[in-house]
Length: 500
Ligand code: ADP
Image (cartoon, rainbow, N blue to C red; front, side, top):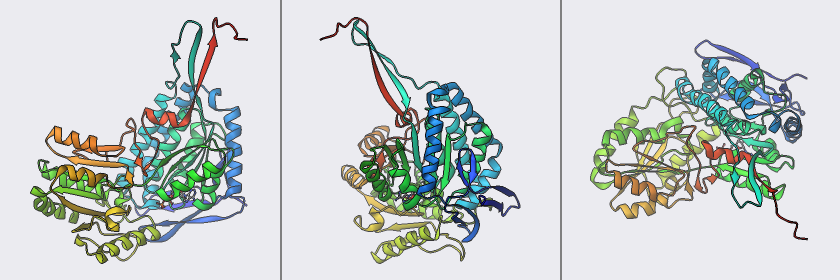
């Protein structure tokens, strides 16, 4: 039995062929069960490939490979500067193949090729280079106690890391996970999302080409309740990093708690408030607000899906928002001027449409959108709801589609309470020309990221993560290094006499 092969033809005529096997020990192999799973193009609903489908047995094999690599050819056996060189090589290879990778991502996830290239893979490269820089700079320190001893800390790798990623930014989440883990000397068993396995598998070829030793990075496609759950519960995985829904995040934590208490970091859902104060630059606020909820077809955990507009500018804001949202170009990601592609799957399409129906049934007003776009694929019209009951489902639950609810507010103090009245706390934004009002608001919001006069700004250098049920730990920046290191304190006796 051999691993399945992926042969893609893009709507623009380009082609790409690579293995759809499980990437274990630097080889592409079939699943032990021989099973494969279907990959669907969300713009058409048609199957484009089959890839190997891992289950618990394959996870065991991948973990053994990662453990062996950790013990023998990686970890502290390879100095930081050499790990950094490998990450830089990988970044160069991704850059060389960026057009092919962006086309793969667009076909598999539905996002526009131009955004896959200009945002996703540009950020993949930036992340790999950023953490390459950290690989030889993440060290402990000497801690002054007294002259009787020398005390210092070491930042040691955690060991074998399990990483489970979602389908909304397939390649970027791959990079957010592997870059800090590899820079700090860990080995990896990563599960790509079953909906979007292709860009990750294509990048595995580049990982091999870059020269990472056998077994350092192992990547599998597979379903959550089988392959994903096997990672979360594995006794020989030292840490699990997860990005996805809050529901599954709870399961990951339970599995870790009831097995080996592996370290857990979680990046989960959100229902982020976006606050427009009356002294905001109106044109800018409207544009950023539209971008904030519709970017990536609303499939962003940090999407600005609750917009609060101060009463004095509400009517004008809504007028302009309507024009802006109506101008969003929805369609196939391979058409040059598309901004919004399809939802990723039939399931997600049905979920989003279900929320829209629920909103209508609950009496909210659809200002624009509210229907399916076109007749094939999983496209949803960008949708703006007003006159929404703040306790209704569409106002409180994460929809993960291009749907925003807009509320009017009068009193700023009350607004902070309302904005913070959510189980989530991933992101928030405030628009104002008054720096004191803007920063007072930013500091009062309970969220891991607050954008002032902008939205969806993400940089490799800046931490990202959630308050409350939006997660545990921070990705990106120097902060993410601590997810992947154990701190060891070493006490060296200089002249303390033995007490006994
Ligand atoms: P969504 O609902 O947006 O698809 P999920 O949280 O279900 O997000 O999926 C994110 C990732 O988590 C995917 O890789 C998925 O396969 C995985 N996953 C889903 N369920 C589980 C589970 N029970 N245990 C571990 N991983 C899971």
